[in-house]
Image 1 (cartoon, rainbow, N blue to C red):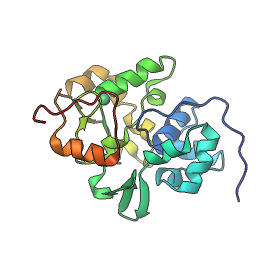
Image 2 (cartoon, helix red, strand yellow):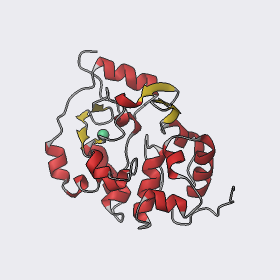
Image 3 (spheres, rainbow, N blue to C red):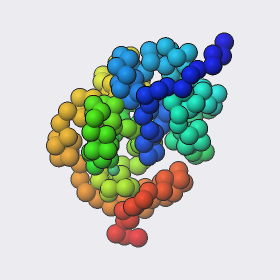
Amino acid sequence: MIVELDPLEETLPQLPFEPAPSLASRLAAFHRAGNARQFCWDQYLRFERIAHGDRDELTRFSAFVGADLEELARWTPSMVSKNRFTLNGEMISSFRSRRIRVRLCPACAEEDMAAAPDLPPDAAVGIRAFALVESIRTCPVHGLGLVQVADRTTFGDHGDDYAIAVDEALEDIDDLRSRSVQRPITRFEAYLLGRLGVVAMKVVHSERD
Ligand SMILES: [Zn+2]
C-alpha cells in the first residue's frame, strides 16, 4: 500500500555527504520518536529500505523530509546483493564498509553541533558517507583521522540508526578530539575519494603529492 504523506513540518537539512539513514536517525532523535525504525514506520516508511538505498523508498522519504532526492541517493549506500553495496555508483563490499564500526571526524561533529546549537548532539551530528568506506581513514575536509565511535554493542537492535549508536561518544567531544590525529590524506585515500565523487570545499592534500 502506498500512502501519500504530508511533508514533515519540522525537518532537518541533509548534511554534507550524509546518507539517508543518518538523516532519518537524526530526525527520529529530533522528534524524540524513540528510534528511526519507529519514526519511519509511523509515517508508513520502511527504514531498512531507506538504509539499503531502495530508490522508491528514498523517493518517498526525500519528499517527506524535504531533502533533495539525488543528493540523498548519492550518499546512501545502495544494496545490490547480500554482501554488496554501491556508493555513488562505486562498488563497496559490506565487509569493507564501516556500517557497524562507525567512525566520525571530531571537527565535522563539532561543526555540525555549532551549526545547530539548539539541537541535541545526536540530532545535530551526521555520518559522512566517506567514513563508511573501510580504506578511508582520514577526513578530507579537516585532515583529521576518523575515530571509531560505535560497534555492534552500541547499535544493539538498531542497525544503521546512527544517532543511537554515536550518542554516547558525543558526550565528550574533547575525548573524541584526543583520539584523533592531524594528518594529510594518503594518495590511496585521495584516489578513493575521487572515485566516490567526494569533492570537499577544502580538501587537505597529501604532502607527498
Ligand atoms: Zn571532518
